[in-house]
Amino acid sequence: MLDVTLIRQHPDRVRDALRKRGVDADLPAFLALDAEFREARTAVERLRGERRGISADIAAAHRAGEPAEELRVEAKELTDRLAAAEARLARLAAQHRAFLDALPNLPDDDVVAGGKENNQVVRVTGTPPEFAFEARDHVRLTEELGLVNHERGTRLGGNGHWVYRGDGAALEWALLNHFLDTHRRAGYEFVLPPHLLTHEAGYTAGQFPKFADEVYRTDDDRFLLPTAETALVNLHRGETLDEAELPLKYVAYTPCYRKESGSHRTADRGTLRGHQFNKVELFQFARPADSAAAQLELLARAEELVTGLGLHHRVTLLAAGDTSPAQARTYDVEVWLPSLGAYAEVSSVSNAREYQARRGGIRYRPAGGGKSAHLHTLNASGLATSRLLPALLEQHQRADGTVEVPEVLWRWGAPQTLRPRVTRG
Image 1: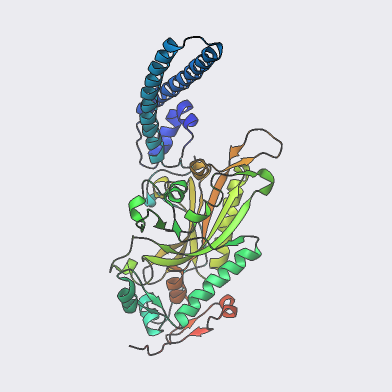
Image 2: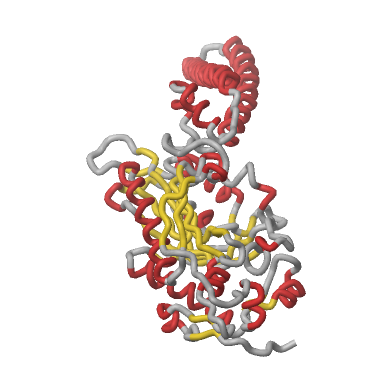
């Protein structure tokens, strides 16, 4: 949620920042609504004060044995006026909140306008592998190596689902163990959150109300988390933390459940896009003064993992229109997929500034005293595996159809070499 004081004092700045996202908010209309809302709130507070005063007068008259009928009539009229004023305030408050809820975060000043076509490449690590043989794509590799069964996954869960089997399941689990162990050794606290969350959790994360229809819901208005970020940002919802506690660093593993799925297009085949995939998520609660450095630290953590797997990749700074609505700044770590001749995102590293903290009422108490303030929230995939596995297979394949597995995964049960095998029907 945006700071309403910022909108009141700098509407032109807010308007221009939102336009970088392609959002043209009617701020003059909101400011008129805001003025009416504040006037209505003042009126209600005044009437409540008058009601307390007349109630005290009636009580005093009773104690003195004096008649209070005129006071009661006046109190009844005041109660009716207050009820009408409160109804008006509730209506204006709902409109006020709805407008603010619909506004995305403001992109950082140096984030360029436009969509993904304006994303900026920050750096490229390594070079695309070149093969002296006819390279296989990741779908063929998973089939020949017996790693993933899409037919059985569809039979179990419908389109957009798959089953990891044999070495494929071992490799998937090795990746997750490697990621978690690396982050825990770096000082991140391991969390296994619920997969079913309340509506308020989605609101705090900034996914609701705009994306309320894009999650899997239960009959009691809970939903399956689309990413562990949605749970982690709510760990301290409604709390005021001591500055000395910050930063708080968490790492979580969860499956991610999303309605969006792929198609039969080459760019969506295999495990590149589905309704359920595994991800290790990093999250930080930080002081505002530290959040820029914290984001770079998260980015370094994600890059370190990709580099350690020997994968050619790049880092891009997303344009405003390609940045998630709750985030002010996002870097993507993208791995190279030879079969597509393109990069695929395996980690988004984002800084929400105080946007999520405002929605969730998450504050910190300065060590030197003074008023509490909203802290900053940051998240990063560390990493998502459904696109990482295809890149690993394609970049490390050999002419004989085998795939070399990075050494860092061997200790977690991954085979040193993946070899073609005959799968069971």
